[in-house]
Length: 183
Ligand code: IMP
Ligand code: MG
Image: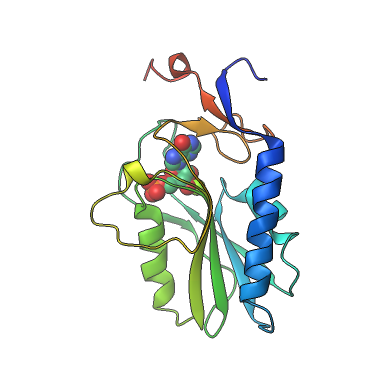
């Protein structure tokens, strides 16, 4: 285990098993559809996205969007900025937004509102992690595909970062508080 990690919250094996289940659910729900687009929210989604995509046994397209992030901190500013838009036109497509983690929910609420205007045939949300305790009271989004609800702790690994570190850890771990208490 990495020296900056207090403990492993979700092991490689737990992630793999749950993601296979999500892929099966999505495959069953979307069977027969041809215009499926997975939209990943960069950069946290990357590891989850490529593993999830390979468990969905249907033809699909992949695109990415980038929004403003936490910078080097551990708390959302609540202000969402679009850094990179989609390459594709999603009108008439079945969109599945793929996120690493829903915290306040402000990022997804913003993206959901933006994408709705582009008239996709349908839009659902798939997130690996969810911190229900942190949801902003103004956010009313429902999560259609969820990997795991987790406690209110700052986690890294499997795509998730702290100041761009730890994204390549193969598990989800809780960062030792002393790593970021100097903020
Ligand atoms: P939200 O807009 O507050 O829901 O923030 C969502 C984004 O914040 C996620 O896509 C992550 O990039 C980041 N984030 C939230 N919680 C964590 C965490 O515990 N570790 C790493 N990144 C996090
Ligand atoms: Mg993210």
